Image (cartoon, rainbow, N blue to C red):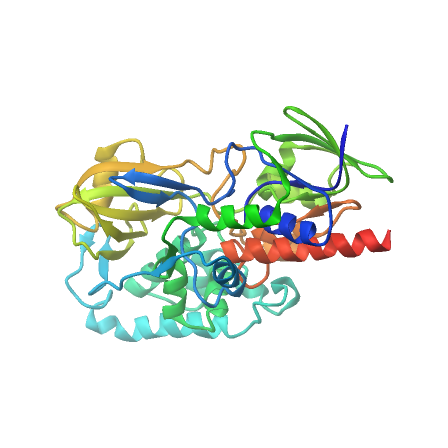
Length: 432
């Protein structure tokens, strides 16, 4: 049986970063990845639309995300800033508004109140500290409830709920408002910064895969693809990992899989009750990311909607056949990504003359190795699970963007968590 110092389960950014750091410290490391590719919740498909590559998962980064930004600089990975649209498009239940602002003049005060409420809420906590240890339990409520609690009304209320749902990729009655507000806090309490981090930041010229490959090559850990882990047995001397294709032994194991996947892996000793409960509940990020190629749409459209199938529709590039649109919905069944007519119907709520000629998506929600998109917590989960998801269980350690602080669920959070986990493992190894 092969023996390693550390077996890393998952070759997303958390796993790849941890493996690199451990290798740099002289550890013998194996990375087991269930898929036939690296990247985890990022997945770059080059040349998908007439030579334009599509990011099926994570896409944007900003300088405030210091961990991923440092990695980009370290490897010289080319990135580019998003072009700003000439104006925003607002869709009210499928009716495109002609006004510059998303509310009529008589509701300007409500729009100001909505923005002020968001910034005031974000200013109440430190995103670098565990949120469950701060006095923000009143914000860890469903998105709709938060909007009602702060007294939002009219279009401003509908827009803010839709905006939070888009950020959380979660239903307004399930997703935690606190997790969406954290985005604003992480951008120094800036609403515009929150928009940049969401859909108007920097993108990778050659896809997120270019950074993942750079980290993998630099780390030099052994990698086995198409190797889903089925069982993890820990004892006083080490950990045995059983996967499709073999068995391997490690002094320690690092789990970087999404939380919803834990329940599908046998652990001995069994996972503690809180971890297992979190896995069975899963997170709230159960929506859609759909790419559409469309004609007869503005080549710089950036549209936000409420009462619409998509919460956001934005132009990314123009090809010979049309404009590449990235579209988000907070529930996995709002739009049939395999039906061009249904994608066109949803896009037309923002661009009434749109002619959709192609569409691509990945069903992350029903992907057995993901069970969702980015890991936004459900309302109430911060108090119950924020700290437990990253807590080590003997020789089994846990990492992933869901364990990060400032940029949970982002590429930056995954990289941060990988670094922290590697340091934790090295310290534990010295003390054992």
